[in-house]
Image (cartoon, rainbow, N blue to C red):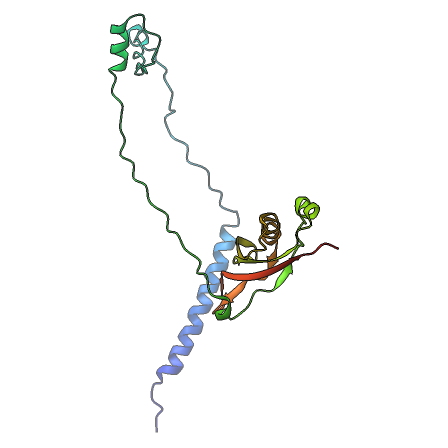
Length: 205
């Protein structure tokens, strides 16, 4: 039985023959043209010359535009007569309609002491200075000052909750309360203001 024509075998043979011919052609080119190719930059056939021409005298004598005069500002001076004074005072005033935007004011709430979740604690509570007049007169007394503790722990305001009956002692107690420092009070994890009571006793030894 005769063997049929096989295309796979024929294709394999032709591929090998073509590869050998291609390699031989490449080698032949390197042998025939062994030199390297150098590319030269393009050189124009005609040279370009720059020609400078002098401007005509008419263009050189063109005058510059005159400067723009600024408007003069009216200045009130000492008038020699009443008529000149009236002319100067006749200048009208320019009115501008300005728009002012009012800033938003955020008021920090003041919470009662019994309602505050985190109470303020004393950090610095100075002693009041005994008034010299009250000391000389032998005045004693008890004062209760109500201080408004701000969100930073400082005292924002003071007032007398219980007076000693002596204005000098009351004033000394208020001056001492203004210098006091506390830890901030908090309500729902937010700093708030709160009134606290500070008792003072004035005694002579």
